[in-house]
Amino acid sequence: MSKDDFTFVRRTYFPTMVFQIDLENPEDLNKDLTEKIYSERIRDQKGISRSNIPALGGWHSHNDLHKSKDYAELVGKIGQATAKLSQNLGYADSHEIKIGTMWSIINPPGGVNRAHVHPGCLWSGVYYIQAPENCGNIEFIEPRTMHLMNQAKYMPNKKRPKECWTKVRFTPVAGRMLIFPSWLYHAVDPNLSEEEGNAANRIIISFNLNQVKKPAKKK
Ligand SMILES: [Fe+2]
Image (cartoon, rainbow, N blue to C red):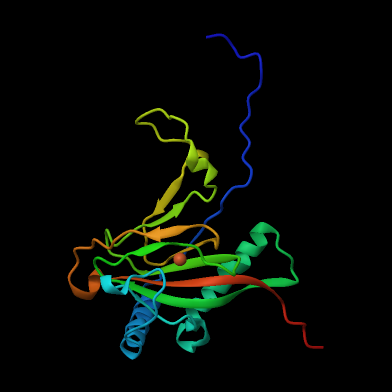
């Protein structure tokens, strides 16, 4: 084969970032959160309706869980993760990322979440508390819709380069947090768990994040 008489470089711009954070030994935290979330569902059985479909059993709590001390440990972990994110992306020291809203969703078998975005914030996240096998992957969808209009033909039976994907799915793992741009469309597949009773539930806490000015230091 003759050698190319040119150089060939693929550069990537305007990427879509998803951060993955895995907590060490999350079992006790997850057990505690599970109990608190079930109590909250007993207190507020109807919950609210957002991307969940209540007729399919999906329960969505109110949006202010972060204000309750019951969730302080998780709020602390989210704070650590977002401080790392700010550092990783070179965000200004004068600002910090804060939770604006935080809620829980329980999807029993059959539960799904419609495709949606989270308006009014910078980053959004999800923390998986209970995630049995086949409980529903989260799917992130290509945000540049012009790329969906006319797609190239790719080699069959060969994985496309990541830069050419039009969707990506993450299998939920208990103790894992994902933080993604709030404008990125995402949906949750149906819970097809075959576990018995509550063990079949997909339980998450989700949150919206904004960058706010740090309070002035007291003199
Ligand atoms: Fe969402």
